[in-house]
Length: 202
Image 1: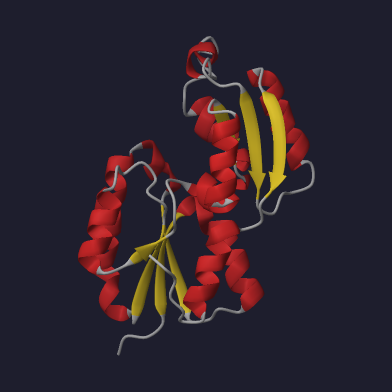
Image 2: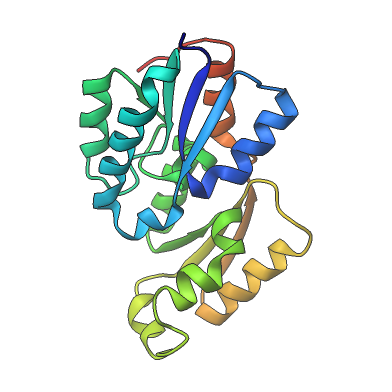
């Protein structure tokens, strides 16, 4: 008999969701994380979620998708409408961590902003330096980042020294730096409502 709620989540949110589950003792929520590397090929996100739904949905009373649009160009919303499911708000994790209003203000203040989260900071060398080939061709940095003016670190639960590490990255990139502690933002709000079996306005 189906029971509990399945959260299909981006692997970049694994630490945050695990922390929220543990702190709130959400025993009825089961999490299945998809590889964060899907963000490098966003056209693969929707097929991966569809396949997970096909394999897992019958086991659960309900399903929530812990992704924003994440570069799918609206295709994730098409799938979720077909399936009658909800997802996190906004275009990406920067927006739902900061909150839509705050993120809009940040973008209005400086459209050329490079954002870090706790996850991206922890994996910066793998995902950015090596992922973009900057370890082999450092001269590409000027081309990749030429339209950026500022780095904003949106911190959820930063480790000791994380702010300075982010500041050092901004210095290497030649960008102004801003540090904001967001906590879990809409991720925490939505999962709390989910655990209480509440709904929210569409």
